[in-house]
Image 1 (cartoon, rainbow, N blue to C red):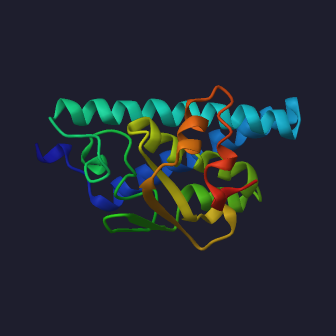
Image 2 (tube, rainbow, N blue to C red):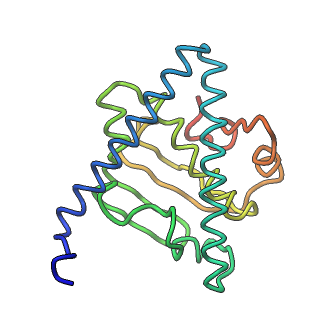
Length: 185
């Protein structure tokens, strides 16, 4: 129905609004945990929550693809109906190749910069390797560049995971600060 259609610019603004709210939610809960438990324990708890969040998203993405008869491979990841990076609204521009994604103008990264909280903000970015390993532990998506780490844009690469990365993913501790060197704390 025509009345169900909205202009792309309006849809972009709505996705941007949700992205800003998600970025602020992450910032507030991360800051609360760090303030309450201290930097080391608070950061550990945030990373544990983000790892679980990513795992759940990755597993759901795999399930959705398998229902479509698709293998959980990097080539198929974006074909899922759930939990891929939105095509618009969460960033100003998205460039994709077979193995890399460049994301310009990350709404979340801009909000964390606005608040001067890039270090807490970038803890959220660990969702990317966790999400991908939840999807298929044989692969990992890491940041080559990340706005909260001081870069002008975010760049992701998908590659085979190492045995150490797979073990970190399976561990209870979920010390993802060792998984994505670009985001090192």
